[in-house]
Amino acid sequence: MQKHSLIAVAVALLAAGCTMAPHYQRPAAPVTATFPSGGVYDTQPGATQPDTSARSANGQAAADIGWREFFVDPRMQRLIEIALKNNRDLRVSVLNMQASQAQYRIVRAALFPTLDAAASQTKQRTPRDLSFNGQTITDTYSVGLNASWEIDFFGRIQSLKDQALATYLGTAQARKAAEIALVSQVANQYLTVLELDDLLKVTQNTLKTADESYRITKVQFDTGTGSELDLRQAQTVVEVAKANLQAQERLRAQAENALVLLLGEPMPADLPPGLTLDNQNLLTDIPAGLPSDLLTRRPDIMEAEENLLAANANIGAARAAFFPKVSLTGSFGTLSPTLGGLFKPGSAAWSFAPSITLPIFEGGQNIANLNLANIQKNVQIATYEKAIQTAFREVADGLAARGTYDQQIEALERDTFAEQRRLDLSNLRYSNGVDSYLSVLTAQTALYVAQQALVTARMERLQNLVTLYQALGGGWIEHTGEQPRPADAPVDYGAASAPVAASAPNAG
Figure 1 (spheres, rainbow, N blue to C red):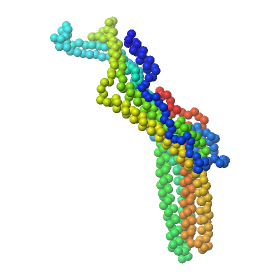
Figure 2 (cartoon, rainbow, N blue to C red; figure 1 turned 90 degrees about the vertical axis):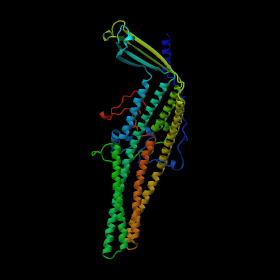
Figure 3 (spheres, one colour; figure 1 turned 90 degrees about the horizontal axis):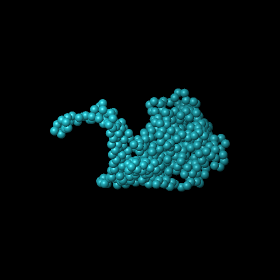
Figure 4 (tube, rainbow, N blue to C red; figure 1 turned 180 degrees about the vertical axis):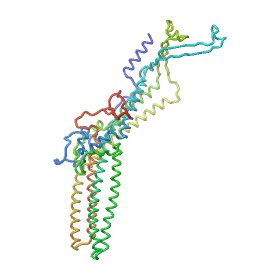
């Protein structure tokens, strides 16, 4: 009767899920309740007057906008699709998640009894003067079931299970963050390639113009109507443009190599036609919302909180180590001195052995483990708070940049127009003998610098929009309006990496 009562109490405690872990309270967000305002933050796209030529997010949050709706370039969309299937960093992230899931299942299994089937033969020799009936060699055959169970009275195993589950859910969020980051990385690298294409065009046009100027200047020098100073000044523009052309071609090749690495496979030959840098037309007016929204939209923040939950559960396991461990072991089967007698009547045998282990002296190990668990929790609290602060800073930086790039590009466009006009007038004055060739050289160099600055600013503006989309939690869903996948959704990469079937609560 006492045995059945003990088992009933154990089952009741296990069903209640009792642990000695501290009550969890989410730390307060260490940032202000709103993003910065005033100055550049008040000059966001469409803040004063709507841009009818730009596409609008229509007030949708970044996390609700599919990446196919955010990006309209069909070539970029195809590259992102390929990368999501082949990128090895993302694949490692998924495998880490699956490994954590398996580890969780291993720890969870300790909550249940173990049952094993066993069969054995024991042969033993006894000295003749100690043996019965003068038989010195005896055989014992047994067949039966062995069972064992640690009754988790104080929640040690439950706490370890909770820790493993939180760790698993944290890796699921890390996988989600890696996928969102990959979408942004492919887009930004593709934009870098487009920028270098435009810079190459600017340099090639500059070199073409400089070559023609150098040819005319050389003819004048050869016929005695021009000076060597004019010739060498014209030559400097040509040589600088040639040097820049080689540097840009090198960077263009390296940028494509970086893109191929993100794709995880060679650049396909059948990619659809792409758009130019000027025609990307990304969504520019995605609302930032409130900093508190980042807690549910940023997987890196959710990962940090899961790690904090894991550290909190570990304290429960460390506390439970101070209390007794109660284990039940037993066996039931048949026992016989002969193999043929195993299943004859009267050969049944059983044993039941409950045990209690109480730590008395551990050399301070349990105390040190508890101190370590508390310190690790404090580390995770700081890590969680830092993740929130980093997310806040990334969004604020993106908003500051978004509020300035449009005006910067407009100013650079006016500057480029003015420099082009200056070059035209300088050429006219030089042709009429009113001015020296130095004015032409200066104007040509200034135009070249202005054109490069304009191309770079256009690329940086687009990359900022992509990064802000990521910082606000965008990039997880493919199409706007679709149901987001759980963070631990399995991925099929083929036979080389078969997904593990889910057996734990899904991570959102």
